[in-house]
Image (cartoon, rainbow, N blue to C red; front, side):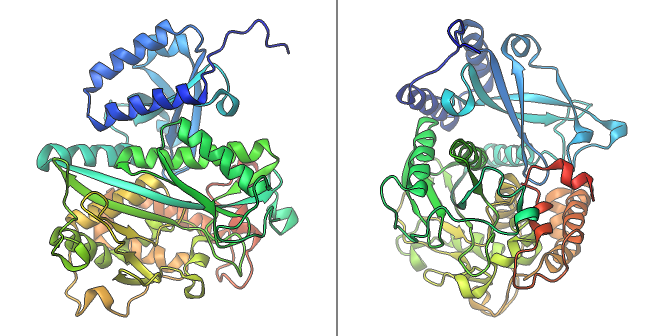
Length: 476
């Protein structure tokens, strides 16, 4: 069909970056939501070239969902957008299916038209229950509420930056077809930092990085990773909810760009046995009044007592929250000590087998890096578990806690048992949501061989929560 008569919004990448950075600055400065809402509604009303608003939300497992609302409809009905929650795994039962989406007007993104379609803007939504309260299984809303409470009570700002690794494989449906092919096909075998300009992996990274830059990610560096066909693109830290949103957008961007070149961007933690898996090293800090509370120039490793206490609590609860950081059968293949895997419940400035690393930092960048997070975890759940454990958890009375011989589970069943037994996870999620999450993880595990073995099995890909193939799930 000809596009000659259409008049859709399509900004240049430079214009997009300017718009997105302006919105990011509003979030950073905590501009009142009423003012932002008024501004956004006026913009949507006045900008005739916008036809639809893509509203994003995540389910309990972290799977991203998107709905396109006609712009004119949304402007008139933004406070009463309903959807069927019974169709979302981990959400409401059929008998209580009606849920609402409330617009998070501050989380407004302008996306490149060549990636997301012309005439569209993107916005995250909060899931609201029938009685108007935040829906308890919408972990984004839980994280948002927790962060807002800490800011109001203590003046704390929770900061995060994530180093998200992934693989680029040949074929646009490589994960969905794995049960037929039994293999993934590399597009590049160069390895760490190595690729030629214009080869498939480098071209993919360049394109995805440009999209991120246009969407206000404030890129830092990007490169091929250790394993063949593996990549990583780093960007600046921001406030915790925005950081989690950017994880979801990062993976969405990578998948969209990969598909345009007939490939698949995969965030399975260990899609191929024998080479390094993919992690999502999670750098976190807490600031107050613009001061980094993790920084102490006289502290051990320049980390403050506040920072060390945060770290110790996460080591204490490491086994409790492991399932929230490593949420799939495949994730436990990555926790293999032969591939620099962070499977030891200890902290170190240098040991890459430690769950938590203390990177070199300064007054602005001092942080702790939680390395035992898989890229397929629910980012809102992972960050919520890390921050709340670090700020409110217990500290175990274990001799030499930071270097004790303790290990994370090496399979999902042990992680599930630790999650279910821990009183701490009930405090984090509440009994109902904890039970729902455990049920989803057990169902996925039970569809796969109980023992991992030495090769990736088709069911651990086929029934992976991020592989979009409802048809295959329904065949079980």
